[in-house]
Structures are given as structure tokens and as C-alpha cells.
Image (cartoon, rainbow, N blue to C red; front, top):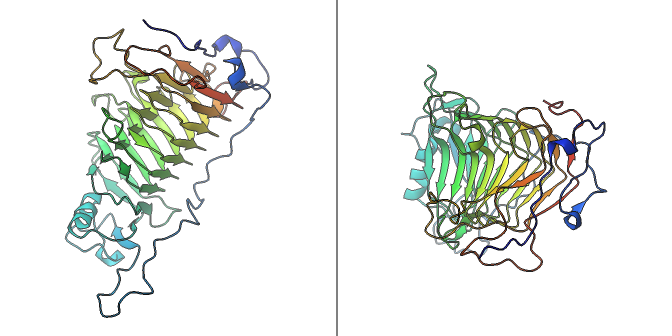
Amino acid sequence: MRSVALTLACLSFAACSGTAQPQPDAGRGSDLDAGRRVDATPAPDAAATPDAAVPRDAAQDAGADDSGPPPEPCPRLYHLAPDGDDGRSGATQAEALATLARVEALLEADPPSCDVEVHIAPGVYRQQQTTWRFTLPDHRITFRAADRMDRPVFDGCSAAGDCHGGTFFRLRHADGEETNLHFWYLHVRNYQTAISLEGGRNAEATSNGGNRIYGCYFERIGNVFDASVEPSTACVRLVNSDDNEIANNHFVDVINTRSGGLIHAIYVAHMSDRNEIRANRFLRSTGDPVRVRDYSNDNVITDNRFIRVGTSAGYSDWYCDHDARTDCTKPDPECPSWNNQFRDNVLDGDWACAPLATFHYFQDDSTTGCAPPSASARRLRTSGNTQTSAPCSME
């Protein structure tokens, strides 16, 4: 028997049309703070240092035996340049490599004992697609602009304009441990998907996590660059990926020319928990900008700006309901998501420049085969979200 634990609520367009002032959230009463409003979200600062106080790993052991080999300089550095050569060492700018795939091969051949930084010189890197598996559970691997004022551009199109799509960076790691990949100040454009952090979707123990995407600029993601390419589902995708931070990024023109509602700027799916999505700018997306799916819990979405995005809401929750559908592909049922938060966001119109609702649930709270939530659980808690009086006025 299906039981509905909560009454689903969704903002209607009529509730916010014709008003002269931003409106507070409308939804489930006790979960919403109607007295708290935000008139504007601080603009993402592309020049901000992502982690000025990030501690580096201790590179030298003061008590090390002087008779042994010298300690490894930390962090270990690799350099990339548009005119680099994968036959080089990558250890200096003069010896810069050409591809991220070669960096991974060098790490696999000689695993480091401390943090790794990949300094990427300004310029355009064309049609790179990387499936990455090497990680260090106790150390970070950072892919960063060598000059944070001049982002390097990873372009899915060739110089001649041939655009094949694909995914720029795909992490495949399902060992239930932190993967600690950091992406700082990169510009990614003309791919079906920019970054996909993938654990195993069928068992919660096969997760990854602890990754960070900061200060990046994602542009023309989906199939907007070539309508013959298959539609995409995400710009940034999390699959059983926990404790990640996605902050201070720009998502611009995340568009499918067909199946427009299929794509999401950030897709939090399949048991992806405790992720923080903060201070991002979403500008023009045919699908709902933040989609949560299948028992992805305790995620926080706050201080973002949503401008001409989506068809249903700024936050939407969907799962493949095996009670109602015959095309679900997981061996076990997909389930509702719980205890997520959507707070202090600015909503400036949907894809059609009608008022953008705050949240929308596509299915009810219960389905056969899903454990019941705790008595205190809520699908979503919201507060402080505001709608602009003139949709798409911030475009």
C-alpha cells in the first residue's frame, strides 16, 4: 500500500504574478520562514581565492632519517599548456603537458605521497575528454588555472567547428572513500556534460566524495552547439557522490534544443548526500536548474541566482517510480529524497520568462520498497527565497 507522508506543495505562477515586490516562499507552512527575504544574492566573485587558508600537507618530516632519500617536494606540480607535449615531464612550464589524461598516467606510474596541483596555462584546449580513476583518499588533486584572472578554456569543438559533444571530465570511482578532486577557475564549453562525479548507483557503499568545483564558468552545455548531438541530462552530475561543494560558479546556456526539460545545470542523483550548492549564477537553462533524484538527502542549496531557467521550479525532486513505470533500470526501487534545504535564493523567471516556482515534487513521499523516513524528516525545508517582480529582469 502506498502512503503519502507529506502533502506535496508547489508554487503556482498565479501566486506571484502582478506583484510589485519580491514574494516570500509559498509552501508547507511550518517548514517555511515567510518573514525572511533576500532581495539580491551576492554576485559570484570570479577573482576570489577559493581556499586561501587551505592547509598544505606536511611536505617534510623534521624527524626524517637523513640517510634516506630526500622527501618529495609537496605539493607535486604538473603543468599543462595549449602548446604542451605529452612526451614531456610536466614538471615545469617549459616541460608542460598537453592533456589531463597524461597527468593521470604519470600519477598512476608514480603515485605521490602528498597533494597534487595541475597548473593549467591560459588558452584553449580542444576536444579533451577525460575519464579519471586515480585518487588519493588522504590528499587533494587540484586542477586549477595557472592565472586565476585568465581561465583556461576546455572547448568540446575543434578549431574548424566540429563539435562531437561528450563529457569533459568524468570521475569513475566507487570505493566508498573521499576522492578529493578540486576544480578551480576553469572555463568549460561546448560539451554535452562538463563534469560528472560518478560512484556506483546501486549501492550506497560504492560512493565517492569530498570534491570541490569553485569559480568555474560552464557555457553552452547540452546540445546547443549542435542539434544533431543527443540531448544531455546534466552540466554537473553527481551519482552517489557525497560531501561535495559547488560554489561561486556560472552556468550559462545549459540548453537542449530538443527534450529541453531533460537537462539540469546540477543533477544530484542516486544517494548523493550532504552536498553544498552555494552562490552560483544560473543563466538560461531549458531544464530545472537543480534536480534531486533517488534518496539524495541532506543537501543544501543556498544564495544562488536563477535567471530564466527551468520549466517547473528552481528545485525539483524526481525519482523513477517503479510502481507507476516499467522503464526503471535500477535493480532496487528508487526512493524519495529527504531533509534537503533550499534557502535564500533569487528566482528570476523560468525559461519562458514566467514566474519561477521555488520547488516541485514529481512523485509522492512513499513507494513500495523504500524505508519510511523518520518522524522528523521533511522532503524540503525552504526560507528566504524571493521572486523578482519582473521575470527575466536580471538577464
